[in-house]
Length: 205
Image (tube, rainbow, N blue to C red; front, top):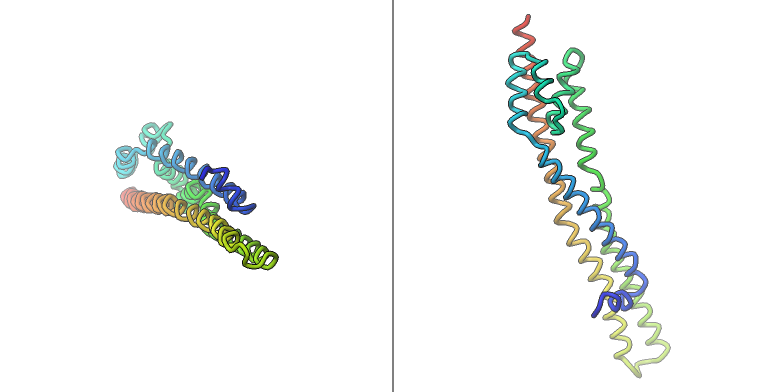
C-alpha cells in the first residue's frame, strides 16, 4: 500500500493523525538540535575553574575568564556571583528556572501527542466500524467481505495512532532525562558555589 492509499483507507481521521505525526517530527528535530547546541557549549573545565577562583575570592578573574561563555551552568554561576552581596541562591534559582523552561519547551506538546494519537486512532476505528455496520444493515450479509474489509481498513487508524504514540515515547523520555541531568548539574554547582562563598565570607570576617 502506498501512503496515499493508506490515508484513503483510514478515512478522514487519518488527516489529523498525519498532522500529529508532522508536529511530533518537527519538535523532535528541533529538540535534538537544541540539545546538540547545549552539549557543544558545555565547558566542565571552566566550571570547575570558576569554583577554584571563587575559593580565593577572585571575582574579577572569574568575570574575565567566563566572558562570552554560553554554557548555561556558567551563566547561572555568573548571575549568582553578580548578586552575591544580595541573595546569591535566589539569583541562581531564578536563572536556573529560566534555563529549565527553555529545556522543557514543547515537552507538553509531545506529552499531549502521546495521549491524543491513540485516542484519535480509536475514534477513527469506531467511525469505520459504525460505517461497516451501516453497510451490513443496508445490504444484509450478501457480501460479508465488504463489511470485513471496512473493519480492517478502520483498524488502520488505531495502528497509526499507536505507532505515533510509541515512536514519540522514546525521544520524550530521552529529553526528560536530559532535563533531569541538567537540573542535577545546576543544583550541584550552585550548591558548591554557595558553600565556597560562605567560606570566603567567613575568612573575610
